[in-house]
Image 1 (cartoon, helix red, strand yellow):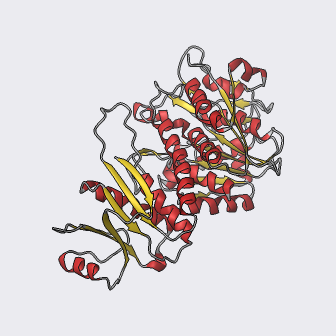
Image 2 (cartoon, helix red, strand yellow):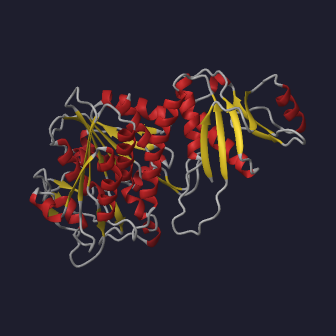
Image 3 (cartoon, one colour):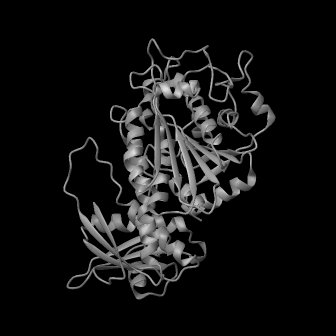
Length: 470
């Protein structure tokens, strides 16, 4: 499918958005010939001879309508029209009990979500073209559409990077892709090779990746869009381009989706693209360490004690708990840079998070409630669900080792929390406002969910954008 969105052109098939209990004659007719009652998300296609067909779309009770409902409805409208081979349609957003600009942006998002496809490895098919004309009285509608299109380009980039198979996306490929996509937009991209990593003391990230013939990398992104301040936000992503588990080997069923173990870094790259394309007034630094966790004669082993850029040591009790080890160097580097005032790390980190929260909620921990509340506001606006998990000194103690500063495997119980707290131990400043996001369940889906596709979702690109653009 190839989608085009236009503004205020009343042409093509008419799509009518109607609330429950509407006295519209078309709704009354639809209720007589079908079960249509304009419930939230309900659709009724009315083919009419000798005149234009009509699509009715239910809004439900207006008092209960949320922005995410508009995303889902817009997505469903396009899919329904495509199924009837409609080439052009127009839709007018009625007056809603929501902020008009936010509602329009959400509707645009839903339309654009419907156009995502990842065809790598499949034969190209002739794509159906469809144009959706959106009628709106929002004054800055063109600006809203352009902004949403740029943000969704970032989401789609994150999805594409995550969906690429491990033989197509090695560590250097991920690093070079970030450079190719972001440098033309004014983002400074610095790539360190393994020698440069070791010179800076990045033994933790290097150790995870040293067993692969595709050598470890370290990437630094810098976007400076606000010259009125020197303050910077740091975004840190997990970038395991393939995770076999190392000597703590995963079963085959656990390896099949492990090209997606760099989904956190992909979301960081996507967020930088969105920020730069929209010229957002913010200063941001991003870091991630692209590596592969494989088995070889040079791989790191269970029982190893390895150093880190922070000077702290790590006992390796499980080579499949590698993500937190790479993040140790990535978050230390980011937070040791000048003028960084807050940091978020994002990682497909633990199966425990999937067990606890499924694929609907990202798990989160924080050391600063005010910063977290600000992020949640941005995440809610994006329609991305996050659940805050508790932290305590007992959870922190579980990461202590008898032979090193920390162990990378705290044992059973509270695994999402202990893994996140492990990462927090490597903040250059322990008082720096910090949020840890575990997206093990939300970055990659086994089946479609609403407007989200099967496979990579590009989770939290929108939340990061909202946080930094407000």
